[in-house]
Length: 173
Image (cartoon, rainbow, N blue to C red):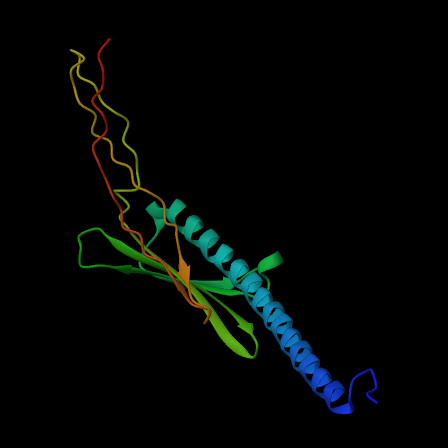
């Protein structure tokens, strides 16, 4: 006569499969939490780098080749920043590099942003018009530094060049 139910071997195999599934799921959850924490710290460091780059390009008329560094405050308290302004081979063009670093998982991580600028390109000249109203404007403007890409290793890099273009012609009265 045959009994209804599971054999001991079937129960052991089912428990083993269940245990493997649970362990795999717990490892996936732990990896997701680790990556979330890393991404949160990287976002803070990237924000600090963007803030410092904006601060430095705002004061572009006073900016000279050299470096500065400091520590973040408030939400960026765990980050260290360093900026480097270098002359390039192009006349009047400078390269600005802002690097922020932080510790994560016992390793030093960095985010780096770069842009090139020229003090004469970052100023806007108001359009001029001739007395007859048929003159053309001669102002130049440029875009602001932005954009970064990153890898899970914690480094990010960005480069943006300055673009200029003529302003539209002024219309007469």
